[in-house]
Image (cartoon, rainbow, N blue to C red):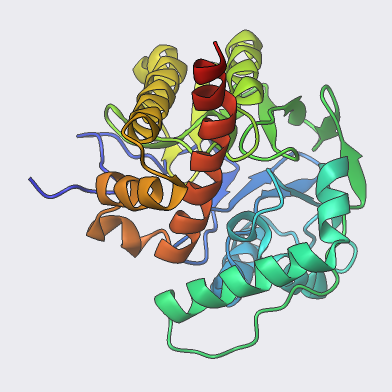
Length: 312
């Protein structure tokens, strides 16, 4: 059977939200959601740079429907190019917008090396998803409001509460929207792809990622909006984090088994690609980015699990 990168639940719309929450995603590779409160508006993530024009137009349309013109906040889950790539263009459109992210994200945005990586990956995504050769910008990146665990962003009758959820990166945040009780989950606790299917993307710390699971469980959210996917059925919420943990442990076992066979990191990467990459995945996820992330994950598993296993 052909593998599908994203699968749907019968009779369930993963982009059906309560009133005042809208999907404004501009194109493949990253999701963006616009949330209206009684007083303020917030955009959750911006998606990739290559699709900034449709993203901007979608935001304008949704604001106009409600008699508004201003985008008040941009909430960033983390500093990767597929979650903040369109940020420079949105700042041009709404110069007064308050960009909210972690202190580490602010430091990343000030790094020339990080900017080069964002630009390179953004260009690779642009070349994969469209024919235009429009410049991919990384200028003007900023964080106006530094968020930490427990911070709140009030929209009036709705409030985002911040959870620090490291693991995918050191700057990753999750958000709980109240009173809707929706957890905007981060990639530190998985990339849900459909019934029973989860991918992992732990690039910095497995210990932090597993701790982030417990933090998210404890928040008690009734609904989950999964990164790169959308809403999951409420009946799947109790199983969401166990699915992530099972997937992560299977991935660890696979990588460690490669090392036990005497394979080096390069050979293990080739085996990892053979096991986890498939054609349909490329419709949403640039292969170059997948390979780069896989290299980080394999190195992390070797240092965190395989080497300790052999020391013991």
